[in-house]
Length: 429
Image 1: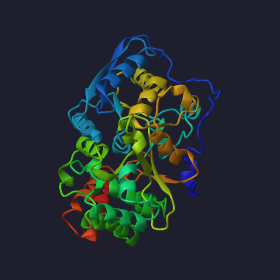
Image 2: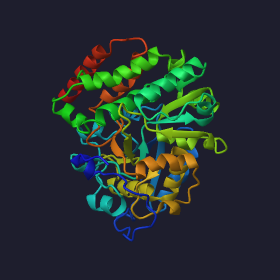
Image 3: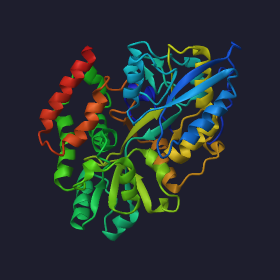
Image 4: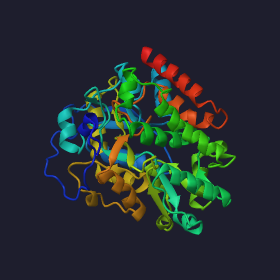
């Protein structure tokens, strides 16, 4: 575990939850006082794992706890949920409920309602894990390792490659696979969010692994992206590109195609969020494993993102029932069961033991979950967390695209200087 005081405060999971706590579900989203019928809009998203059926079923289940309330579901057109929420805001259609946004992009405009601290403490193992300046706008209901290095055990064995535990060993593995005509690392390079995984892993492991306070230090202007530690971390991605770690067509490969390529044994490794665990065909999962991106000295650093799906608009037509619905949806075991099985979510509920979700998981899930529950160094997943360590509005997207631009631009420090300028402009607004 990190010795950093702020990370100690949101110390994440120290052990597998094996017994249900006895804390009553007081204040957990019971029926609101008003009996008047009302309705809300709910901005959701869909992926191969998070299907329309999941949303429809989970919404229907939560509505049973909020009589006289209806929900109209809106679907984001792509993976950029923040951008779509802002687009709706600009047109006067800001949703009453929003799924998996970055609250930091909206709180300055006072667009979100906070969740009560008492409710958070009653229901979650790490009640402050998503707090921004001591206030939580998204319940900390689950976590994900973001990213991990998934690997094909068969390909590793065929090429006599041991699991790398240091950066040098990782690079050596890349060179071995490349020489063996195997794509060393799959990359879903078409979209910035999925292309970002290697640079997210490097910034988390190398920069935050050495200084967990780096993001706060950047806010305090005591560090910059052009400092040696950050340049060195990003230089590793450029070096991987030059070493042929990725396919020549990597930047035209979308997420679904990258998954298929990896599952079909066309690449040896794949740096992706732990949500990928839920995408593996059950009969193939035993052939794959996962590990955090190795560091120079072999120390294990686990980049963690705590999520919670639900945010509630302060402008909601019926804020009371919208909040009651958000709480009911969040605490519904059926919702989390699906997220465990299909999205590789690691639950952080205080009152529900893992086995009580009734989820069916693979050994790969258990292996990945162990990195959350075991005593390892855990840091914020750089550019992905939604708490105090969230980057300024708009900066995360620019950081994600760095992973793509490094394919065509070898000037690492120059691009990071631009990222510094983008950061400074964002915080000045």
